Amino acid sequence: MTTFDVPSYLEELSKTIQELPLQSINDLVRVFFQAYESDRTIYLFGNGGSAALASHMTCDLGKGTAPGNGGQRLRAVALTDNVALITAWANDTRYESIFAEQLENLLQPGDVAFAISASGNSPNILAALNFARQAGAITAGISGFKGGKMKSLCDICVVVPSDNMQIIEDLHLSIAHAVFRALRHGIQQSKRACRVAGK
Image 1 (cartoon, rainbow, N blue to C red):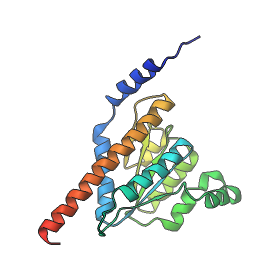
Image 2 (image 1 turned 45 degrees about the vertical axis):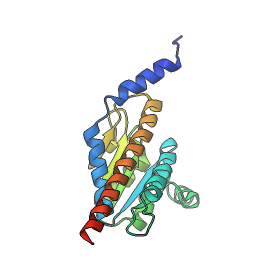
Image 3 (image 1 turned 60 degrees about the horizontal axis):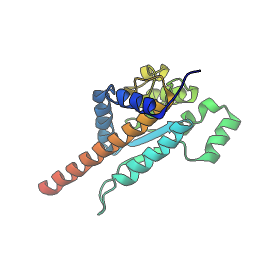
């Protein structure tokens, strides 16, 4: 029987952190900042723990970047939050359609479709990314393992180099927080520069 202990898990987590693709994470910050500057919307989606992260990340992006004194705000929407709509699409069509159908109502060219999937192979994630590409959106996501099928559907895909689901989910949250902090800083700097320029 294989033994498991907490220190070995944390050691694996620490090792994987050192192997994260930092350039891809920075590219994700850039795409989100461009969405803010262009007044586009970021749509986030995932299943299970990734659905919870989509909601969490949407809260951070929407509230955490909001200026305290008015001004432009980042628009972020979690497609995981309307349970009635999700179950209606799942019941009346198929579960694979729950995100793509919502995007068909909402998505505009230049918006960002942001997928969260540890495996990168969830059929409803792939369907949503396929639709988003056809609709002229920027597609991005975070995954694990080797990126799965979603990697080829994303303009930017941050792949956590691990085959341990819990390590992948831990680092997805860390990436989400790192992206949020960098994005918030960028937005604050942009606002300061505009104030200095009198815009």
